[in-house]
Length: 118
Image (cartoon, rainbow, N blue to C red; front, side, top):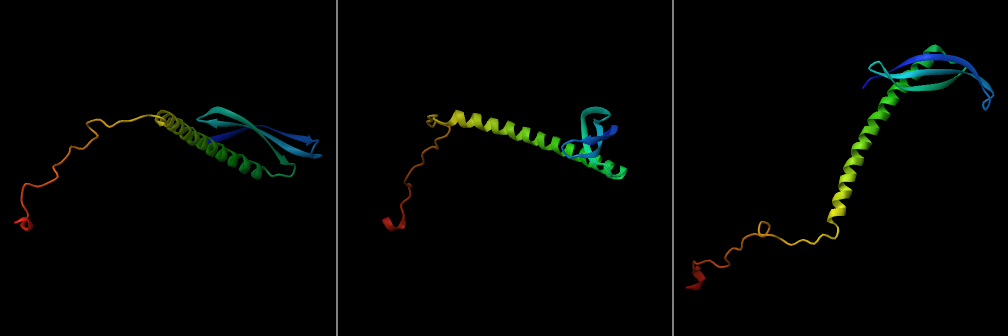
């Protein structure tokens, strides 16, 4: 999946906790042209346009990786849930072999006499 970003708004703001001005960049994350998320990042006031666009692009890559990891985690979780059910069903289960699982008995001796027995 290729996520893209569309910058919607950039404002100069003042951060009270940091006691400094910053650039607040608001952007949409798009997938196939549809907005899937909105994010806002803050940058030091002297950050260049190129640095901001590079960071927003990196954010898109990170967003895609996070979604891939989440999908993988969901698959693992589903498999683990299935394993939990198997464990629950097996613990305490009493089993006895049936005819299909017990091998047929073979004769112990041979009808031929060995040379030693003569």
